Image 1: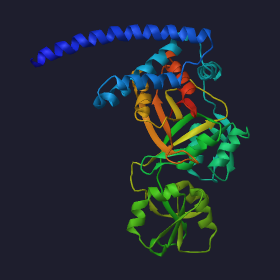
Image 2 (image 1 turned 90 degrees about the horizontal axis):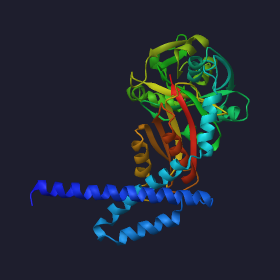
Image 3 (image 1 turned 60 degrees about the vertical axis):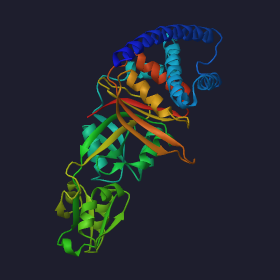
Length: 379
């Protein structure tokens, strides 16, 4: 047989598969109707395991893995169709629709905002990008920001989530699981670090540099070029500047913003000391209640997946089937467990279509834990 003959055979088989697929989906819809009438769950793990075991035995051993991937995907599609045809919005999609209907048309210009650190912190600069007049409440650490929002002490909070060169701010991602809050908006802000010291200090005299661990990491090149200088982590860049300003030592400096030089009467020994000129940090503005403003185009999720081959692929395939562009995917160890991971997704989604809401309801029903973090825009 020639190549064209095999392709013709493939076309014939594909036609048969499509017809069988349609029949299977019709049966799946009827099963979904019966489940709803009897108030039974859509997802029945035991039944799906039985199907996977049966089809694995029906093929040669070398094809067993392939057929399991095929049928796992097929059952995912069937489940999604059952939920979609039920015309019953789940708790999550109802919350999303309620938030879209009740969130004001315009993001507020004035609000109480929890910010970590003190005057001159990068998070303060971010807050002033989010709001024209932020009424700032200073807290000691990132958890203080989450707590202030969760308890209603501040309407919003500002948190850094990732840097373009130094990666994710790990403690903030942990807070997403430990506290209940939503992302109302995000900001990508350019970060220019300055080496600040008391007036009259010389660069060659510096032996210790204070700053937040993220800022220190973003300036690795500076420390490589000055091997005698020790990096000393503190809780915030502005706190570092204040410590240097109050010290009587002439051999210490801080890595902080240019604003801190003016605030704490320090001089800039060196400007733009970050390793890369293309240095950006993403900040999120969090709220206690779900707020979805017009123009929202980014969805953030945290979820856990079954520890089996293909489980991550199955989720990504669902996003791809709806044409959702994956903006970010990161895995982090689950707190208190061995070799279990949480997956963080950012998706581009401008249209609040029934298909997307159905998918979110489906994931919310099937995965534990599953956290919908927000539907928001980035400025």
